[in-house]
Length: 278
Image (cartoon, rainbow, N blue to C red; front, side, top):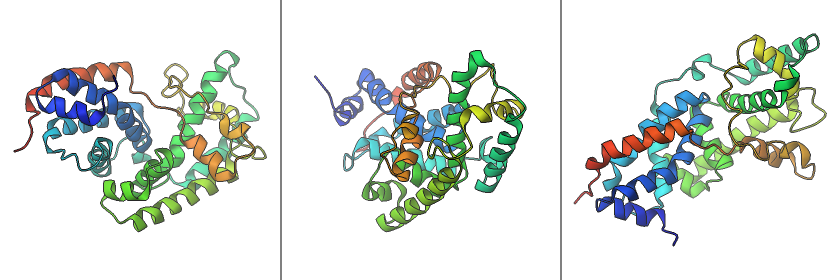
């Protein structure tokens, strides 16, 4: 029998530790996906996700069942991600002009350097995901979070405005601006969005390795499931907005196994704090 998340929350609040663990397992991938798209580096995303899940577990008794549980969790996650200290990737202060310069340098460098053949598929995937994440880093936090919620997770303006505590109009305005910035950049540079563009993930590999953005011995992103990450390139029937959205929605992030084990331990440790507010 399929048990809704809200029913599991009710059981957790009655003292059912298995239900509490099931609640966390249901939401952890979405929280991790949100965190990694905001912070870029998987380790920073793991740390932030754990901090968010602690808040969710310890404040579970304050959930009033007035919205969906996921919306309530997003509100906690978003507030945390908007106010947390800048992490390593954000400290680079990446902008669209700086990313454009890096792309040009990569194309120039690749003309005299080749990619290691045995590792090429994994390296292409590593560059693709890292670059897409980098494009989102060019947005400030306020626009990045709206873009991730509205474009990646397809949250409507009513829900998004509730999560961010802004008006639906403000949410739609930020989403439109974010979409425009991302679309215009990728449409001008990315070969996956427009095959007439010179830049491809393969061509960027040598420069990415040279500058240390990609470490072939320690890949950050290539292990994630990316079932349709070339769909944006292959589906020529889509308009530019749809191709960009298809690219940005990949990969389907799943919390790493080591993180899952840490979260299970966290749930057991925090279980005694879960009590309904009367």
